[in-house]
Length: 317
Image 1 (cartoon, rainbow, N blue to C red):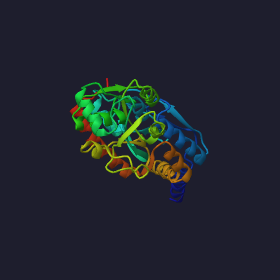
Image 2: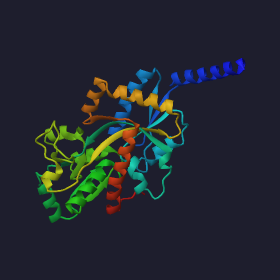
Image 3: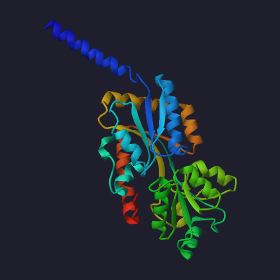
Image 4: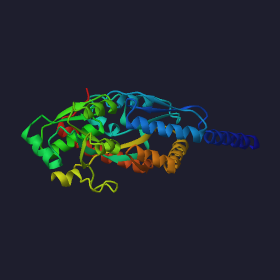
């Protein structure tokens, strides 16, 4: 009996030591989008801080395609041991509505932590003869299909924000999806496309006169930009609310002790003044949520954008 108890204690101590030692090897963060966008930038910021915290390499891998579903599918098939994480955005909750066939089961991935978000701002190129949201709507109604909206891809946050705006304003616009944020912004600044929903990261271009900020897609004005009206108030609209957000996911079968350690470490890093400063510099707002709150947020986002996707007939080929 004594030998059985001793063996059991050794096994339990071994499990405890193994859990406490995580991570014992490099960790991979998969970004389901192209390099250079906000999701990629956030991933690299957290990879750097996690590597310093864990004393292990944290490698960022970009696996774009099919509305972020290819990268998500890759992580869903990874070992459920905490060594492969996904950082996702709105595509995580909209793909089930847009894709004819999902390359992974949505419940194969579990929300872990949201780390940042930012309301989208409606920008237009100076060539557009509209200085307010109301004027843009009037111009679009008088010129059906003439106003073009850039986005970083079909189903991305800028694309869905533009679809929501067009639906609520009852206007016909041209959607121009790009393969990534960099290409979308470049053509928008060059005047090849007329309008773009983006975060505060593009406000510097507006301050320089290269583009014009008309309104923010939030329920109230931003504290840092009190002179910028909401799209709703400036356009006489309702429910045009859209935010970009960024959070971590991992295989659903990942042990609870590993989930908790990663989540606790993400929160500690999110609370660091230097992290918050860098997140703000990206035009984002630190917005940490734990697994329970982030899971509820995912469900609410899915329901809201699912309605827009169905009404606008949005699909990813």
